[in-house]
Length: 420
Image (cartoon, rainbow, N blue to C red; front, side, top):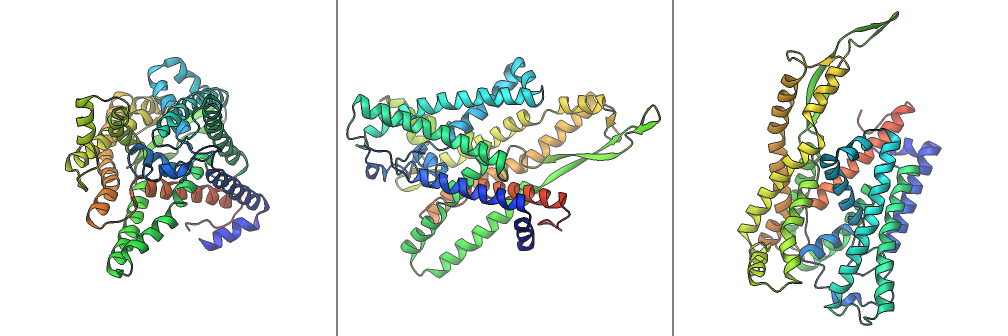
């Protein structure tokens, strides 16, 4: 691994890309610590550790707790991307536009950017009025409120631009690396809190370290795990040339949906609690209490059960959106490919659907275990920060994705990669 990194720095282009990425991430972290003028972030210390505010603070790398320029983080862009993916399923014209090639994808991305700005404007407006309840906005007049809303919206737009700069001139996926930097930036503070609270309880700290290593290894195993479906292409003679006749495979990942089911499930569970903060309705308040992660300082079993079932359900839902067996079967038939022992068409589509349903279940159960692990650790071991869950899953996935990108660049230049 270290030899591969050394080889990457020997290549001028890769070295410049890596340094450019590091510079952009440093600029992002500077903005995440730059507090908006006219606000009092000290009033938010108790709020950023719970509910939807805590989840947003995690993805913003602590920027929300400081009420900084980048408080909204990249969440509006992620929400916009999810909305566009769902709309492609229900709007045929949008789906056809996405399949037109590079020009079509540019138009879809442009629409996604506009939706991001709109969502950021709405979220900044709601956040400003919500944080007013805790005294975080001392001067609540038109000038100060407009300044805060415009600053938060512009901050999200700048983050989106920084991510696209990394895509063009850096390494890996820019948006993913920004989220990675946000999550990793919280680890030192969490470890300091752990040592401060647990002191010299080396048994508990050692157990925590073993769990950490085990979770990371399990995430790598599941993320890399896939079922390879063999595909044979028939030979075609065009003029004097022979095309096809090769064997390849269709990789069906165990965790096809990534971290999206956890994000969907968290949003669904926190929606009643968020509405209950603005609307004083008795049944809505009761529902929010039932869906609370803890009751009386102890873990809520009903929350754990509902949370797990929602993750499994959304894993199947998002997998059905991300991978279409009928479309894959039709593409195979169009280009002369077939799965040995199966007829092209409906038989191939049904076979792929059955395989996908079977391998999605262990991946969905794994996601549920990873998601509820932080709550269990907090309840049983008193861990002072949300270890595991979405944060570690995203961090490990982005690290693997970036490693593969660098490795592909090294292999193009006849250098050894990370995996020999």
